[in-house]
Length: 286
Image (cartoon, rainbow, N blue to C red; front, side):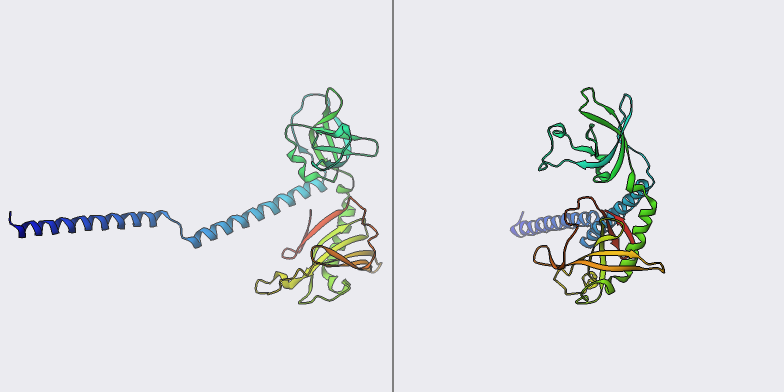
């Protein structure tokens, strides 16, 4: 075999190896491209998932509120024994809470004027939405009498007073439509939008609102424009309300700062809190 022939054969072998390596890399790239998802598509999928999760949560909240207002029972667990009923405010016990000895070691209890009743059970997750609401619970007393094993729960009392609910909704709709004429100060950028309404009773309500400029994607507003007013609203015979602003707050560095009036209900624990959805123009109890 001549040296020229050897050199030619070697060149052919080198070329063959190079072609093989190139083809293998190209094939792997094709396969990877077929199995990979473009970044933009991944981002869109994540956005769609987040949007769907929000819709599902909103729907679940609406369904719960409807059941609550109608006083429908929600099952918690199957427990053998004679059923007993207890009614009052459903309270949740958090680690930092100081409670009496008879409630220690429990997660929930019913607070009533006569006595507190500890609630027991392996899974009380169904009670989460009922926290701080008037409820009725059916359950079975434990052998030691220290707790009641929860079987089912429903909203009761003020939570199912449809005339009161309708009155609050009517007032909230009116506040949302008239907040710019009620607020003590004008919106710094666009106009005021109601965020929440927290009812102390049928006519005294804390209203939180903010500048609509914050909802504009193209806005360069960086400050928190939130305001709060304690409003007393009395229905007028001809429609609408007589309104008095009892107190007014502006957002400070970390929290609201009282600018005028006095907070006469600052120690009130149980209120009816709603949030306004400006897109659907509806209220959600939170």
